[in-house]
Length: 64
Image 1 (spheres, rainbow, N blue to C red):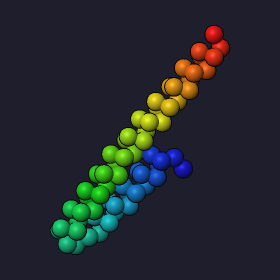
Image 2: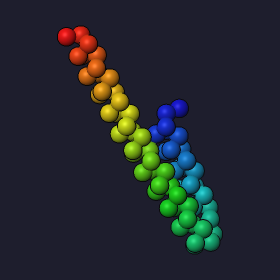
Image 3: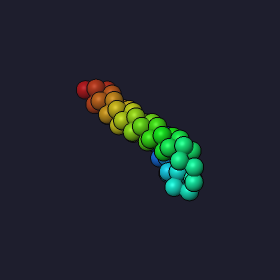
Image 4: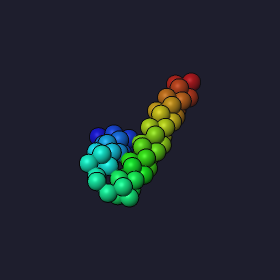
C-alpha cells in the first residue's frame, strides 16, 4: 500500500466517523482530520510523481 493510499484510507475513515457523529464539535473535528489526511495524500502523490520522473531522468542520463 502506498503512502497516498494509506492517507486516503484514513481520510475516508475520518469522513465516515464524521458522518456517524452526533455531536457537532466532534463532527467538525473528524472533518478537519479528513481534510488533513487528504492534504497529506495529495502531497504523497506529488512526491511519488516527482520520484518517478526523477528516476526516468536518471535512467535517460545513464543511457547517454
